[in-house]
Image (cartoon, rainbow over all chains, first blue to last red; front, side, top):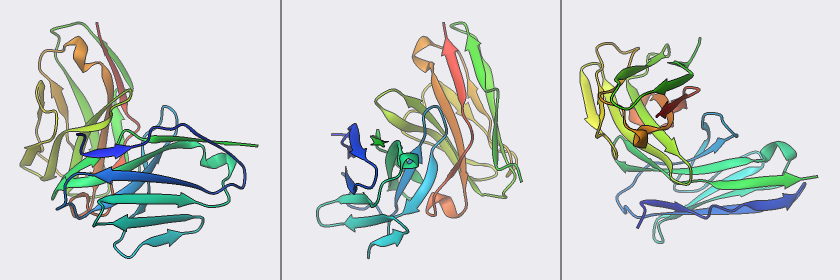
Length: 109
Length: 113
């Protein structure tokens, strides 16, 4: 089993839609969780950290469920510019970060 | 403030050749790391460093060496290139051991023939 698993998609949604991605992780001792976005042929960029109580940044909401070992990302009011691959990241041990393979999102006009 | 820089952007090697991928950051981050990204597999950690003089292996360290003589630089050495090392290589840096998220360089596209 991979340590961090994501549905690869693709998710194709119209502008204005709400879309959610989930990511599961295998190490119950993990303490740090992140979502990154990666545009085609570019480097990953940090989108947001995921905190135990859940957190929101504008149209983006991240949630953590420790009991079920998954994190989620909700995007409201999707924009064309949200089209990208979204990467889930979980720390394997203190400083060893493990990436999921990514979920591809395409927002269409 | 250039952030994380990587050179070269593209490289073609023949099997058996060696080379060094350069990575530098100007944010005074203690933590630096190297990943490779292959289609369908996501980013995999090769080596990381939590400070000058300290390095550790990640998930896929075989065939690669690193050193960290300064806070700014974290070069990745391919000892004897193999076609299986054809990949995109990303360097990243972070404050606080990566627990606050990492900043990535633009990547090096390496092809081994």
